[in-house]
Image (cartoon, rainbow, N blue to C red):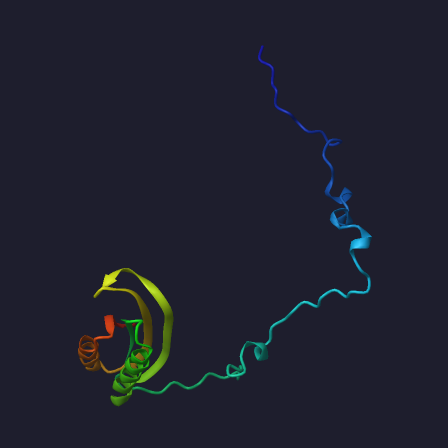
Length: 160
């Protein structure tokens, strides 16, 4: 006959959770100094974030764009000229605002390694602009990005 070697625990062998005191893992009393108060838990409020980013409790009104559609403009800028980054952003802003469009958000990344070289460049800065404007401006933006030599790649997508 085969003997069953599985171990089964009885109630006496298992230590109940209540039997373990919470002080069992605490260091000896001489390690704790009674004179040093425990640090207060830190809570963050809106004034800790940044003085420029105060919560106002109300949303800023968005500019109304007649016949405007939401677009996402993404382009990769060369890293060797920091002035070109500001110039390209200013030019795109001027193009959008020139046709009564509105820019909702601009995000600029730090220098990132490209997955493959583009025009012998291995690093680039990604710029993403969320804006609302009329359909005809996409052709003008495309023309500008093709002419600007500091822009490695660009993409203009319509958000839904």
